Amino acid sequence: MPPEVEGTGAVDPFLPYLATIRSMVDLTPDVKLMGLELDDPAIRDSFDYRPGQFAFLSAFGVGEAPFGLTSVAQRREGLEFAVRRVGTVTSALQELEPGDKVGLRGPFGNHFPLEDYRGKNIIIIGGGIGMAPLRPVINTILDRRADYGDMLIINGARSPQDLAFAPEFDTWAQAPRTRLELTVDRGDEGWTGSVDLVPTVVGKLKPSSQNAVAITCGPPIMIRFTLAGLRELGFADHQIVTTLESKMKCGLGKCARCNVGDKYICQDGPVFSFEQISRFVEQF
Amino acid sequence: MSQFMSGEDLRSWLGNLAQERTLIAPIRSDGLVLFGAVSRAEEIALDYDNTLLSPKGHLFPATDTLFTIERREGGIELVPASVEGEAAIFGIRPCDALGLRVLDRPFLAEPADALYQQRRARTALIGLSCHKASPECFCTSLGTGPDDPSNVDILLTGAGEGYIVQAVTERGKALLATAPLVEAEVTPPPAPSPTPVPTEDIAEVARRAFDVPYWARLADRCIHCNLCAYVCPVCYCFDIRDHSYMGRMERMRTWESCQSPGFSRIAGGYEPRDTKGARLRQRFYHKLLYMPEQFGVIGCTGCGRCVTSCPVNIDIREVISEMQRLGASSAS
Image (cartoon, rainbow over all chains, first blue to last red; front, side, top):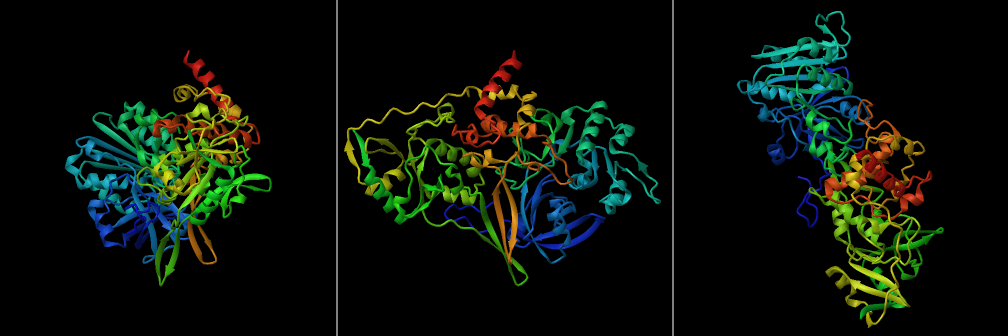
């Protein structure tokens, strides 16, 4: 437990919990799935989170960065993060091995309101590492399959080997009333699937907007064209939900790095519908 | 009748105060007046309009260690920074005292920023009314004024050969318990009148002045030196990074500015505010629209430091006036 701040009864919100790496699995050439266990048993037992929430991971001596939690709390299989090597902190995290210590602060932010989506058809549209925060959405729906309508998963990546969650594709594709569509920007010799951009696949598959919610995450350019495509298919902005990536340093609504209009992405988000986003003064 | 302290008695009271707590006061250093720790009252400068920097750095330092990281037999131990002892800031102007009140909004919001909270609780504010308004001052347009006692524990106002003393809070009264005060019939000189700036309904106006070419034009000359943020008593954006040196690891917090390219850049290189115009607009909108929306306070105290410091003469007073014009004209 982080020590109490003298005389206030509060804990220092910048002090991370200590956690031990239990597993490191290569998902793609630049993405590793990191499995963590919190060191303090009391915190481990009480640490609860929802799909869409995120946490900061520390590579001690190098720094801290925010990552979406990609595991499902109810499965009790430890905390998982998909770490893509893009900078100094992610590179340092990737060099760690099972048994090494990291820091963790969180969970932060709001979550996908899956309870509101019961009975609806779900369209999941993820590009690249953007699948990481969508994976717990998919797995939560699969765990409560009867509560939801049809699920269409569209997952794109630069190349077949960049499809991060390939080990789970069979489980997803074989689940009842679930369809998995994979697409890549560039195929390779073994690839027999679709070679198309994600928004193009959305346009081809034409999912119905009737009683549906589309949940998307990916590079900004993919989101922009996916949004346009979904609107063309009759999706209203409140039926399209995304999780916004943003520069963040604290997760506490203090550092103001993620300030957009009267919102802090870290506290008011990261999950927003496009109806909410369209009301932001500043459009990203 | 007012409580009164002579200039000589003030120095002896401050000298005693410096013995029992850390006393931060204006000092003259290489021709600049800056807040610093003093051990003797003689070091304190009293003949200044305002300090080059606000005293914000004594509660929210430009670089601050949040905790140190110790490696122990394969394990890691995090040792949080601690705040020790009591402090007082003497000579804080009403604009800067309001600035701390504004900083309280983000930093004391739950969960409170531990270091700021402890420093704030342990620091008494002994304000000094302004005897004159600098040309850049416009505090009266932002809800405070040259002799506003509302954000300090004690307010001193120069009058004749000494100071009229107002004990504003209980803490202020306790600090004055040993002060050589006398009852005196003194009239303070008239408070100076800074030139007003049209801040009325600025948040409403801002909503209508967002999408205009003015911001790109104004920002064209910005060299993103970040001085405006560093001298501002309210700017609170920060960065966090780890610092390793000679085997010592610390997690540090440092001031950051929304004018820095890369302030909002995310992993993979996407830059949401990729123009100087978008970044400069963020500075003024955070202060004039978003902070009022989030916290109910304007993020400016009218101290005028950014006006004085900006090397390319970007002047928040002109910006506010221009926003009034743009906001009004696009509404009609």
